[in-house]
Length: 252
Image (cartoon, rainbow, N blue to C red; front, side, top):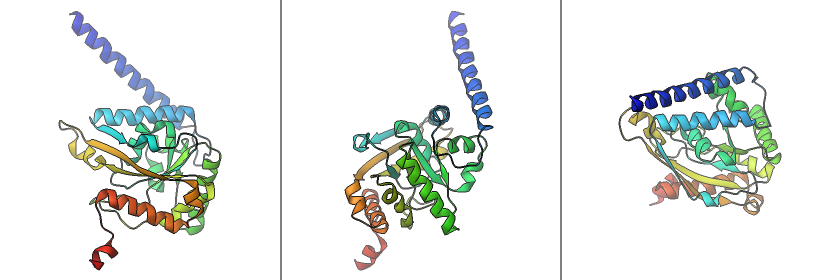
């Protein structure tokens, strides 16, 4: 009887905390407008960490970060990685919470009920790649956020998820951001996030790895054009993923 009561007390406490989190999150989301936020909210960060932790916990996904010691701790930075799943930003928000990585994302992600508003308060930015002038405005907003040291900025150079795991064409104009903000670029590769949905609800959740490949410092950023920075990042990712650039493959 004692054990049963203890189990029920734990269950009720857990459900109570989940309910409190849901109520606070929903109420808070009503205070968020569609404007660009250049100051990160501490409450939004807590909500995001709890949400992403819960997503990994309930899907029984294990996230490992390799090379975390390479990440700068004395400055904000631009974070770039490959893109294979909608869970990619979530694992970064969960495991690299102290770096406050705010992603540049497509407009539809900001329409996700309640969470789409929460990420706005985390300095996430939406980008319209169909309108160059509007896209440039987003890049300038990202540079401002970095200059204010309010958050690091993350983006996926491919611009969209890869269905087969192979790197797609890079949008190298995005690398104007570190040039404008004068910050380093952290290059990473993520694997395993595409297994989260496939393995849920079956036993043995996804094994996710974030591997930090290296950091391009400000001296490197200052001495290279955005397109050259993009090419260097792509080469680093392809080497790690074992994917040969098409031009090289044809030459062989």
